[in-house]
Length: 134
Image (cartoon, rainbow, N blue to C red):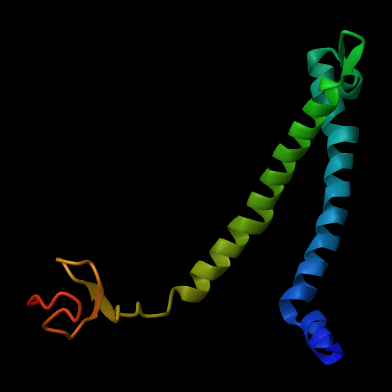
């Protein structure tokens, strides 16, 4: 059982996931700081409020901190933008560049028009419903 646990822990995707979580947490700290220290004051200067975190309203002696929510939404939008433009787009371009010299592979199967089963391309009859294929 101990050797199985060791195999599980040292498996590539478990280690990759652990690294991704640690890097994600560090990246989250950077984005939170960017929002809190740079973006929020910039937007607040335009809107007249110095800090969104201090925005709240009270209802039946309960305090609703909607300013924190605004900060969280701004943080999410910045994080999504950064990930899209600095991670997703470059990876997509790299994949497109690496695949540009590859020939497209021919499919090995086709759909039967009658029963919609997958049949080999060279088949003349469907193995499931026995109709003649073109």
